[in-house]
Amino acid sequence: ILIGEELKKENALESVGGISFITNLTYGLPHSTNIAHYAKVVRGKSMLRQLIKASNKITQEALEQEDEPEIILDHAEQAIFQLADERIRQGFVHVKPVAEQLLEKIQEMEGRAAVLTGLSTGFADLDKMTSGLQRQDLIIVAARPSMGKTSFALMLAENAAIHAAAVVGIFSLEMSKEALVMRLLCSQGNIDAQRFRNGFLSRPEWAQIAKSLGTLAEARIFLDDSAGITVLEMRAKARRLAAEQKKLDLIIVDYLQLMSGSAKRFESRQQEVSQISRELKGLAKEMNVPVVALSQLSRAPESRSDHRPQLADLRESGALEQDADVVAFIYRAEQYKTPEEKNNLPEDQKNVAELIVAKQRNGPTGTVDLRFTPSSMRFDNLYRE
Image (tube, rainbow, N blue to C red):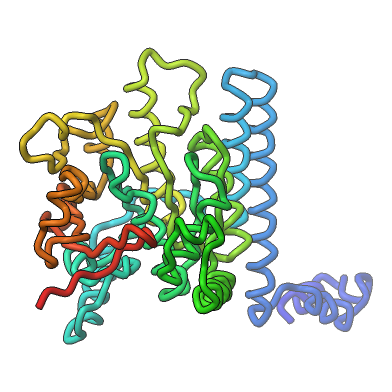
């Protein structure tokens, strides 16, 4: 109307098409009722600009060839996934909103019984000590050979996937996929693994295996048995799994010393393990999941009268202790006894495993007793009378 009045004063209104033409011009203008649509368009253009920027950076890295191809590929994949997941890194955040969100969570838990802030391990006393497996935590589970590291890790996977509907990714650098599934079947059905391996099972036991297979088929446990995998390769596979399954709740690595470092050369194996440790912690943070990494111990416990492991026994690198949020040791006293000594043990001391939580960045340390069944390689809660 104002434009029309001004044109009328200048005797120019009719020459531009009259008041009806001026009125029609407003029909094509953006309106506040369509703001959501316009915002979506702006957001889309922004994402395209970010994609162009990321593509140019990837092209530049590939042309300059300053890094190994695997590292450049990881950078490229990370950039694209960040765009797809809308997880562009943000800057500083003031402490106030973080504190308010934290208080809201704590208030929600007030008055509730045994609320876990993390993923349940399936072991009551361990959950009580740790409040579950926490997102972004690197959890080192270490032991001497034949103590049950893999069996314990598979129990964590089994409990999480079956009882908490979690998505679990297992990277097995030592055992094949078939061997892992055999262990899962025997553990789930409480079947003697040696007899199952030889096929000497009774009809009821075969029925139990079939039932266990049905249960595991519904569980979202994913296995990768690539040998000598690097954290870069692991990260790429974890990203794809999370994208395919729409979430990822737990990553298990069996075991850390069999991994390869991402760099081409290292001055020492200790330096390589230190890098692997740092990258596993980075993997936990990036994927926002707990990463449980199994680790071998040095022979030091063998030379002590008390064979229980200590933090200093972590093999090949002190960085494991520094980078880990939780360090736990599996110790079974029976492994150091003769057959005669084992037979003479009181019943309440047989098949007892100690899970020694030697470090917990945000909680207490201590020992949790578990029941270990060697025949089915299964860990369970230990209830003493």
